[in-house]
Length: 219
Image (cartoon, rainbow, N blue to C red; front, side, top):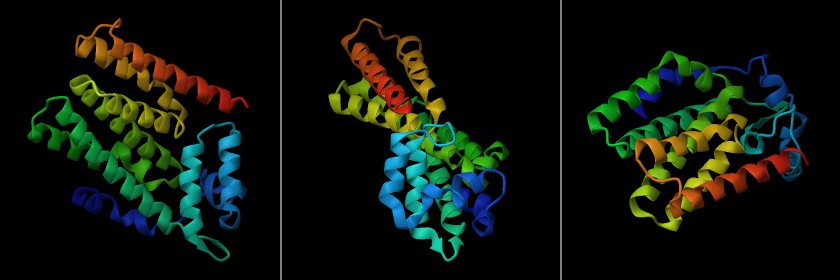
């Protein structure tokens, strides 16, 4: 958390930019705080700007609800949310690496490297790119529970893995590739069988979530 603050704290004072922040945030007609519930229903009912990422837009709508500053939205809460999400993603990365049996020192090193790496500047400083950090957090949480499911075999661990996969997919469309990574870990990294009941349960869950996403996206 300290590393995130020391690296990216200046973004708190930044304004909106005219590259995508306009159509996605401060000129987005569906982020009107006075029509919060109607806006949320719209995001879940149909794609916006040809993208079906309703959870990302719902998160923006929640912030907009509390960021109203007549006659325009204030960028400060949006930038603050970016910092918090990046910190959450970095923390989850540490626990994911621990779950992958790295030492705490190696996990801390790679997490700190991720925290301050220049390639992440856009995801943290650019409000519109916030869904990248949100996707990362959900994806890492999903993989953490996949590791736990392999270890304990509990239905709750499987359910949480699928829940966070669904959250990732409804946050950014590239989340659809997460089951490929999960299957690779399950089969090749851990040597589990495709025919095992647990993998069949995972595959059924992935398929159901993806089918629901496609159905809603095309509605």
